[in-house]
Image 1: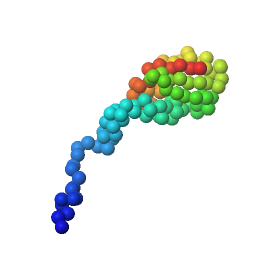
Image 2: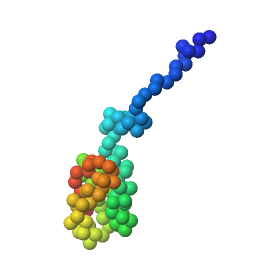
Image 3: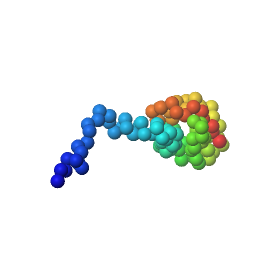
Image 4: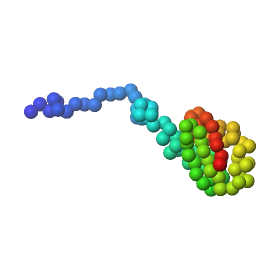
Length: 104
């Protein structure tokens, strides 16, 4: 029986697995979900464990990071540093996906 007919050697590709995954994420419009899943880790790394423990929830809505804080005083302090927080979070995500921050 001619096995070559049924068994083909894989073609060699110059693309890495990472490049293929990036194309798939882009093709299926999953960037937002991917960033949303990375946000909690990025928030803790950018802000530190003390602020992360005072955070009730983190959501991403239309490229706006919505953060709910437990303490009104901390919410007030963070609202003065929105631009710095935005830069820190985007650095952790390795992209400029988040465009705005809302602290509640």
